[in-house]
Figure (tube, one colour):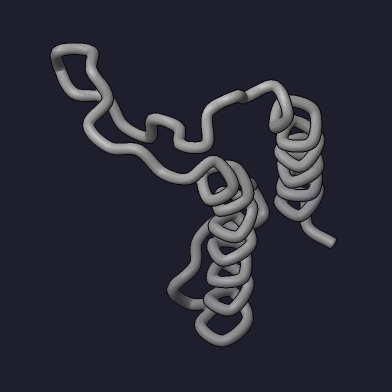
Length: 82
């Protein structure tokens, strides 16, 4: 197991713990996802997508890195750095 896997596992666990802990504390059903230069939100997403979509995105990126390091290792440099 690479050190990057340990870093990913820790980050993944923290995001899950934060979602479970802070999820019920967010009262609105839509949350701001991006802010403009004037400090106002430019778009909103459903709360469940904003919180749990990050976990899906993290897993997809890690899967992509694993696939790249497995099937095209000559194109990947320093994957073990995390």
